[in-house]
Image (cartoon, rainbow, N blue to C red; front, side, top):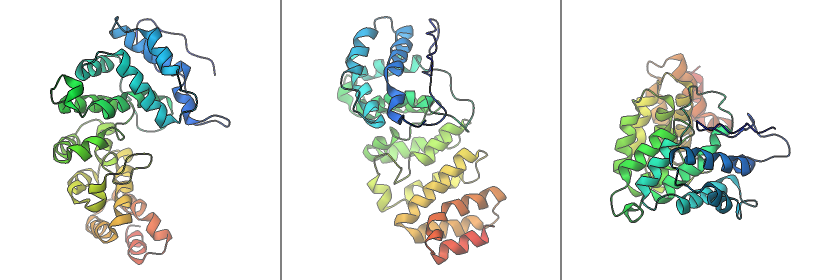
Length: 287
């Protein structure tokens, strides 16, 4: 696929297919072109950034890494070449962002360009030692609020839920009412106890009840993108606490709209396939 020409005046995303093609992998999304693009975007807003040196650091040892490993690798390279103060570095990254996504369907794979950005927040945004001794929580939340509008902060929010569960849940509870569906989806997807590809949240595997108010707020969300996440979150809960998940589904059946019935059928589809009677009953009632 031909590369897009560099645009001198505005940030850009690298070219990317809509889906993974035969003979390629997700790791290819964070290759030479993405690194060049990242250097270009940062240089637009931070003239002191040494883009050439950053690209050398970023390419060194990149080839054998998986997509997630590349995200962490590029975050380390950013740390090396951005200001040492975490908040200063994050504000530069935020200034370098492309415009927010305007849809929630068929997003393609170009958004993985922002995996290094969320990795940067997850890796360096928890420790005051990286932020001149100041609490980094607020700037980290701001960064994830903006990044999730362009990719998803579901991977980076999880270390904060593990380190500061009450603070982070309180922030997500507020965001559950945000006008942007990408932000609302983060509130459900980022708190899933067993999110694929991501660090598990042991406290929520043991007791998912602290997150239930968020799911309650989002169960009738206007966007399917958000409701699908709520359904998958319920499915996660059903793996460890089936009684709690089925009980919640029973409650949500009362006065359920067509959209909520779809959510409930989707939530219990896996135990229903295994013949679990409660799940089969919920699917029948939610027709």
